[in-house]
Length: 278
Image: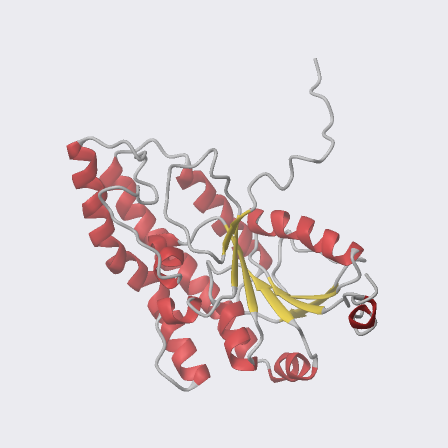
């Protein structure tokens, strides 16, 4: 013990940091907000940047909220969210749902691309971020705008997500993703597939490059222009330091994960809920 004391004198207590947050609207934000509340309790300074047509993202005492103008109105955003939510529970045939989802990706990609471009070329906010001395950036990688900001200012990024369309999170983290064994998003398959289900899963995997090209190619062009070098979605997301995934391995099918992926499913389970009425 006597030998350790001189070394302990040089140690200082952990210091709180400054966190920049570029969130995703909708239910994605509700989960992230709980994390921000806990981080605030631990002394971290938090700044949230959101478009002025925000729906659920609100002001709070636990973080500073900064907004920027975007072309789309709040009413337009609410209409798109209602329309997209209704499609999720559709019972139409698979091919019908597939083509409609393709159109949904195109529309949502256009919307979020417009919002992202408004942020990236907002000189006032960029100056604020550059002078903010942020220690980390927390963002939802479903739209890569936050990560583009992180790359531009060389800020370590933490991703907060469930999954990204077309299994981009697996490719970006350089994880294995065999379509014969890992069910694709929206396939409704499990990890126990028949031969016909494996064929269907494989065909969906082949189509994903086409689907995600429609949704994400505008972001790739925007990132390449803003960062002044060619960028793909995989390259953009591959720079993430930590992936916080809102899933639990107990309830998911077996899947390969990389060391920097952490499962945080059930982060709300500790909350006290009101009992159901009779």
